[in-house]
Length: 454
View 1 (cartoon, helix red, strand yellow):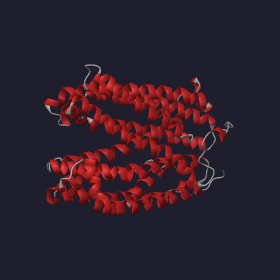
View 2: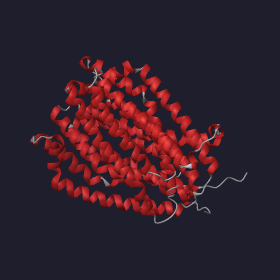
View 3: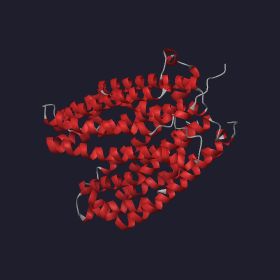
View 4: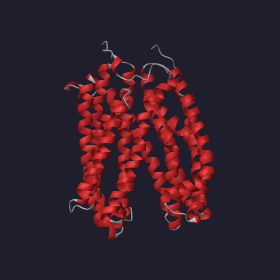
């Protein structure tokens, strides 16, 4: 059966034009969105602490690892599903694009509802595992229950955003992300300050803003893109499409989850080193997150770029895009080294709003050692997202598994002997180990070496 071809004139195809310009044009809205989310997170924390006090803020923070893990899993899952849409879009196969979109919506909703239900049913044991104190248990429970019950709305926004990015539109999701953040802050003041809901008000503000953003995103996307006009037939499961969707979605979800679990494992050790070390590490990690933001943004962009170009059979374009992205991130790494060794102490003091010399010294020791190895995580982020994009769903998960196992090993082997120095050297060691299978997998991948007729 001859498949109907997509007219890409109204979409943002990544299969044409200069590679680096296409990648950067796609990546810029994602970068702005990530920066906006960082800013919004700081404001959200400030509102809760300002109105309800430190105890309520601690109750929210006590469950942040759980919400981060589950939302991260959902984000990874939906982004993985979108890679398959991008591949069919690159091949200009309209029928399978719509089939993949229908499958993305169905699978995304099922996974979100399943996670929500299982988490709510096992919440008390989870709070025990997280060592949430009795003093915080009541508020922590009331907050996280609302967040877990509303995971579906977070998933729906991510589904819509992922489908739009799959066809090359990274700007529209940014608009609705900003809308969600602004409405969340406004609802924080309304529901926390104007009602007796307490921290549950902050959770309701998050869920309501996500529901609003998801609904408007779907309405706008459907109006703008005829490709998103799905029929009943598009939601009928197709074995080939669903197999690819699940393989890609679960691979990306576990890849992200293993990274977060590894970080959580390290945190269990860090929490034993005393308050000043905890504060120093928290500040250093915040700085690290800012420094590494271009890695994750370009990585996410390459996943879609590689998916579209693999569908179009343009493997040479994929190789060129990856190479140029690596050079770009390595230039960024050099800049971060210069900043760290020149202004690192001032940056830490600005983050923690403290001039405590012990905190500053500890955090700077972490930053100044690890920044020397940033070239490696840059490659990790770019390679594993690219590999997801051109269909290798196993190697990135294997690499992330090595990261998880390596960080767990640090907890048991290095930190008892080296203290916080074990944490400082841990990540570079783990980075070097986990990048090896990615390099081997990338250069040996037969799909990437095979040229197709476009």
